[in-house]
View 1 (cartoon, rainbow, N blue to C red):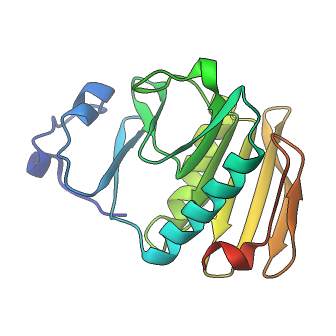
View 2: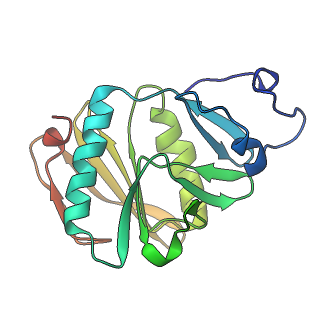
Length: 186
C-alpha cells in the first residue's frame, strides 16, 4: 500500500474524499479505493497473488448458482459516497449489480493477501465490510498458504474456518466449495 500526497494526484485537501474524486484517479496500474473518505492506493499484485485469485475464481465459477455471479477486481463495491472498495473477488446476486458497480455489500468478499495490503485487508477492509453487513469475508494467504473465513452473526464476524496447506477448505455457505489452499498459488 502506498501513501501519496493528495496534491500530487490533484485531489482536494481538508475534506474526506468521495466517489467523484475517486473517478478522477488516473488509469496507471494502481488500485484506488476509498474507505470512509480516505484514499487507499495499492500497487499491482505479484504473480502468486494473481494465480491464487485466478484459481479461486475458476473454482467459485464452477460452483456458483445461476442467480449469483463471481466478479474479479477491479469491480467497485460502492458502500457509500465515501467508501468504494474493490475486493479481489466477490460473489453477489446478479440482480444486485449494475454495469458500473455493486451498490451494496456483496454476499461474499475475498481478499488475497499481499505484503503491501495485509494489514489493510485483515483490519480496515474487514471492519468496513462488517459494518456494511457483508455476510461472508474470506482472506487467502498464498504465502502460508491458507484460507481464513468469517461469517457475520449479530453484527460481528465470527471465524468459521481456517485451513492451512494441503488440507481441504470446504464450505456450503454462501455457496458450496472445496479447495486446497496449497494448490491456489500454483
